[in-house]
Image 1 (tube, rainbow, N blue to C red):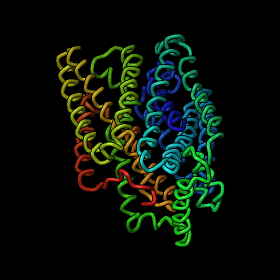
Image 2 (cartoon, one colour; image 1 turned 60 degrees about the vertical axis):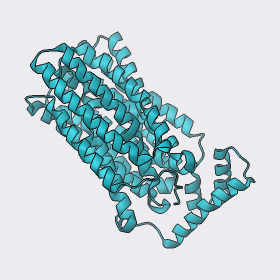
Image 3 (tube, rainbow, N blue to C red; image 1 turned 180 degrees about the horizontal axis):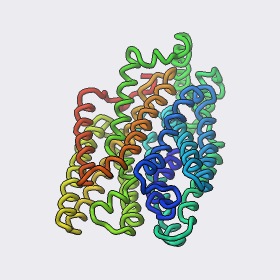
Image 4 (cartoon, rainbow, N blue to C red; image 1 turned 90 degrees about the vertical axis):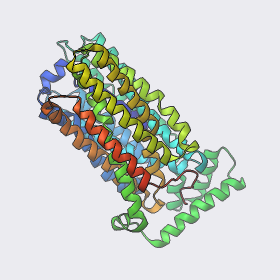
Length: 444
């Protein structure tokens, strides 16, 4: 549900930004205002991940996820009630704070509760639910917009209902998470060993007296006790020695995930589709649903491939595939615009779908899974937080900059050439610097 929350917010804003009454009230036709409205959410994410880099160890993973759900509901209510840019930005930041928590803590929780043999597949469920949240949001948005006056209507109902609907998955998250156990590795770290053994047994569907449950928990406890004898993890430790290399890999992976252009396409998709020749309804209602279906469905190959092929091959294939897709969008988008050809522009959209296929099956799920599994327990929350902050900081800067860049470009399709270049860099980075973790336990 944490992933669903994350995805729902991403799915909401792109279509809302194209609603005329929203533009009129908040002045988002101005590139600077548009940039702040879109990016403030991600700046909030950075702050949320930073605060819970410490609180996730103190409160535990479960309580942190509960805090995320409550905070997200508050943020959604503030956005829906906004009548000024200032209140809207506060609501965006509060929602971002909540998702900063969830995006850092949920993958860690999944990694700490999953068996080694299926950990990659289970942690990619987080990305699957992100894509499901994006899809549900686009469907809800389209239904609301169609039945309350459309994007060019004269009332506030379309965007206020779309924003307010964010409270629904937030409430579901709080209710459902109340029933999940604490992380057994967090319980071991806190010395709550009887509860930790019971949790492992429950998660594996066996008795606490079963020797396999005892052996698995003893391994977890021994590792936690060893790390406790070394002392509390410092921030300096996170950036030195082997931990420093892990931190560098996680940070660069997360930055590169954003530099694929994924959030720009999700947030500003309607604008991008208009730039290559499509009308308002197609750009703001039909294409978001089509591409969000592709995004959701194509996450399943990644869930299958992460344990079959490994993390590194998927990331390399994904980089090549996304570079190819961006080159196709650039080429056919430019040709379609220059020749006023709907046929050529349609081919560009096929390449957008190719991009979503490769992102959803590789860099979308694998980066989050990889980040959650490479750090030792004593620095895991801090490491995941810093990597998540890197993702959101990169995304915030890109989202803030994009309206300005788009406004300055004579050929709007040139933005895809920028994304192509980063995908080429990604391939060589993974090839040379990123080790495989397939089949290893978190303690290994």
